Image (tube, helix red, strand yellow):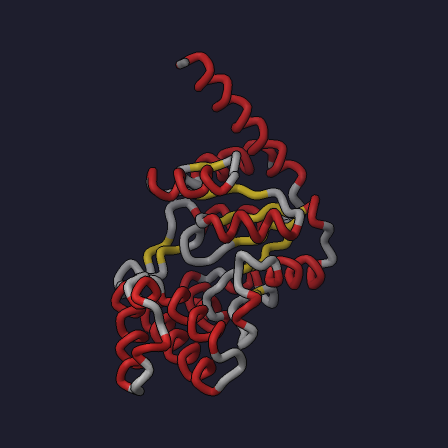
Length: 243
């Protein structure tokens, strides 16, 4: 069993090296691979706040019990958008979520090794883009505080009013590929959730999973991801070796 595990690890390292070598454009999810957006501003608290706001407007019955208890602000937003697509209610709820994300950006925790990896790839001439379900305004705010905006601008593709196109729909990846003039097989996406993996698969883009803990890794592998790292240090070392 240990021998099999070692063989699988070598294969995964080889797959990672090949993906990095082939990539000419890297599509990054934001919350997870680049930073923990809600490190100091609880996502669960934000979700509760959205639910309370809906209930304060007499819309308690708009969500199921499971949706009210999901602790995921995007799940709350999606649920309302499915029932009232394109409505003023959805637009107002989305803006409330954006404002909460903007507050969270001030206390976001950078993901270890993300900053130097981004700067190294940019220095090597790779094109970088953000493909996220978060607001592009929030992404721009965070990247500016880290001095990273020039590594990505103008290629930040985040949440729009068309909420049915959030990942796992590959829409934001397609936008990034078109804007950078890139074929899917010359790209690499870095994400930390099953929806990231499914979006990459839908766009035909090779996928690298980032899992900061065992639960994240289990979820990614359960969705079908085969190349997963627990630290971006491994990616940074391979990129520097090939520079």
